[in-house]
Image 1 (tube, one colour):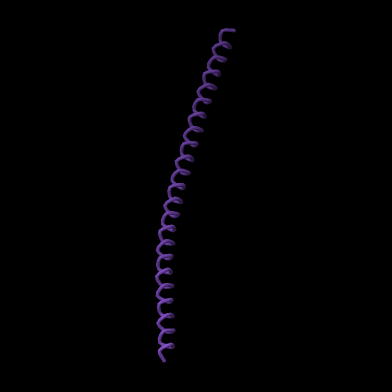
Image 2: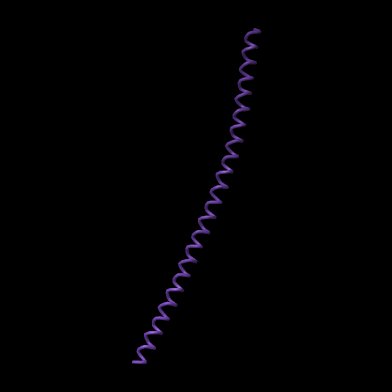
Length: 83
């Protein structure tokens, strides 16, 4: 009977150890999941900033191009009037 009781106590202590390890692993998983989600949010924010910067640069280049074309057109009209 004592041996059976010892075996049961040993099994219970093993289950306690497994439960503690399981809880520890769950907490670690939750922490890693939070870090992962934060990283994703930061990357998404950076991606949106880059998209906006690219758009702003394209718009600026377009305005410069339009101004250059307008200036060239004006020069051609002035030269045409002089001829």
